[in-house]
Length: 589
Image 1 (tube, rainbow, N blue to C red):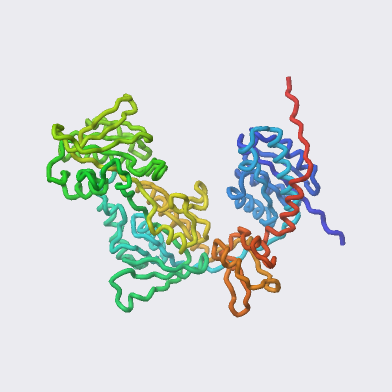
Image 2 (cartoon, one colour):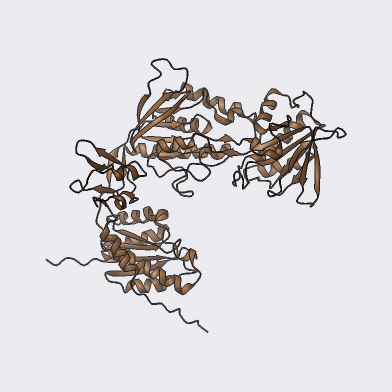
């Protein structure tokens, strides 16, 4: 019996003007229609939109398509979207191939003719490759409803309570001897002067008393093994150990939420501010302690006549951190209000680079501060202020030299007390947490999300989620929202009872495996284990991300990457090097 001929549908996305402005999408579609086995080729303004997906699904049904090629953005962005369209039409989701004609074509080229020819070549490669695709079936594993939450600050407690209130057991691990995190060090919050203690106390009480939450203080995660839905975690007490407490407790969990927070920047690293040398140069958290005590005074016990607040200490600085720590500006305005309230005769100077008033109510808060007789001085981040001790004839403890940007003048500001607005930094133990949970960090040490826009709380390790200021600097509302988002993602998985595992993973041919263990060492996801009895390596499919490192590294050629076979890759290369012709259409006069 003659084998049925494959019928391929090719879909070219304009992506608004992201692609169509540089690539002649219509010409690419016309070219695709001439390729072998291509039954139809279409363009659409936004292929990832619901109408675009519905069009693909309807074409599959009406034209009996076997395979689909979508030329659009990065597969990392929308491969799952188009797989869903195939499933909706009853076609195996792995009969899809994407050609990236946005990030790898239209975004990196200006020559329309060259970009269009490149898009044609990429589509040709995708068509050749999709012919080699095989129908793969995803697997599913049982989901353990218990959850591990690392970090007992506002993010960790919020996530834990959301999960526990839904009926799931939560193991909440906190390294300190108390809950609350960095917010426990704060007096009032901007812009509405809510008490930080009041914000935390309700959550702390509920967390300790909740029947579905086990709190581990002075504890840390020491080991995490297994995979999504079936993790095993070891929790170790850190100090004051009795003989029973010295043994790590092992708990079974299905998901992990990391909410480990941040640490404050060490102000002594900025030497020209004199922190640690000039006694009345303090950090924002040291001022918080003063405000809690009800007294804002110098080290000598005097009420300061002049107070200066310096922004961006450790932030927006090439030498330390180039990012903005986000919360400092509004916190500085809060300090100005509180200092003036405690001492109405005090002169407050606010020395800043830019005023970042991004949140709800923050712009109004800034306008109120402008009317409260606070002197605002703008400095350039390349020409930062210098603080030094005042002379015997000066009516102050210190002088701050500022090159004021708006006036262009070099100004000396008097100060009896200087408050340094220290930025946020990734915690020292963040590398240890990343290693234990197999997630990534950026150059500044923050944990990396799976996708900054579409997957802001997920990571590349299935079942491990991140929330709060361990991801990047953010304020309390954003931290709480992200913690709830992480909890919602976990709850959605728990509700299904099982978790689907992607069918794209590596496989070891034991007949060829030499047992050299090179793949075990090189796997970045710890997805390969060694069977001591068989002396062979084995891939844990639930952990594998199909990155291909083991396939390339295996000296015996014993490892095959499902959906990334040699035949598929070679077919794609052959298609890309096919000869393409394109002539720009003549302009209509």
